[in-house]
Length: 389
Ligand SMILES: *Cc1c(COP(=O)(O)O)cnc(C)c1O
Image (cartoon, rainbow, N blue to C red):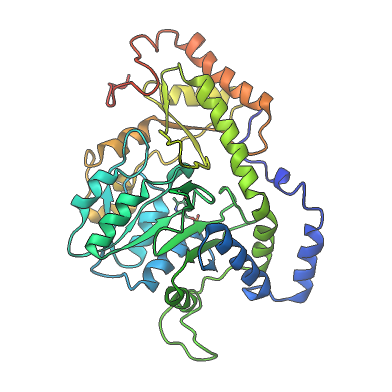
């Protein structure tokens, strides 16, 4: 059996009209922004329980444009997670600001909120919490720290469309929320696309300028903006998928629950979750303290499309050498980069596929390395930092 990470075809199964609608847009010729984009922007704002959406080219642009529209640039500092995807930190640098990293928490695999206050300086302009893998960051303490320091919170929600914490969708807590609709994400376009959401009307207007070459009325450019606007074809595809997103996220949750239940006595652990939050499982990460790479190759050799996401954390990437970060500086991010492994998770996964993945993970421990769970103290009770073999 082959268990893949993506199945794009299945997402379109219930949209027989889509090809006709694409044809209509192709012939009409209004390809960039326009009514299709405006309607999607309204629908996505409603989904996120915010006032406004502004569609842009990518999730990376969403972050850059949000920061530029908030006046963040050279000389400023922006705090984010040491274990995020490259784009979050790159976006900060692309605005001219300096990224200040906060280590991860070994239980949630998210930014360690307790370490944020120590990262705030007089130059700090914003905190970018990242709802990594689809799990909402513990947002209330971050909002409190930001309020006290008079700085902004910009949520990186690129992996968490529809995730809920404190009764509200992610993206709705900060001054801005940034989303990616890259084909790999829970809500995906047929190519690159992204969006910023906000409930601040003034910011929404500045986002318009910053995504549209600073243009305010024809031939009048009031600032230096990017040229980063959502296409009508992508907006159409996103509009047609959006009504299914909640159900797709729930189906991801069902797969995740099966994995958690039936792998829990193995020497692996999972992202800690809280009963009152909705995790949307963009990725299903398992933490494998011993022989992660052996498990990875074993699963791949058995047809399971497991993968390691972000094996090199931000502070050790050559692109950020100018900041002088050293190995050992963010030890939890480094350990997680060495120990996390993604099992395939898709909304359309069959029970047979999930059973197969579970059986293959179990087979690895039972047959390949029968002694690995000796001394193991339980899925969540394993002491962090236990020596790797
Ligand atoms: C995907 C992603 C981005 C960037 O989105 P693109 O659309 O690929 O530019 C930013 N942050 C995180 C956490 C992501 O996963």
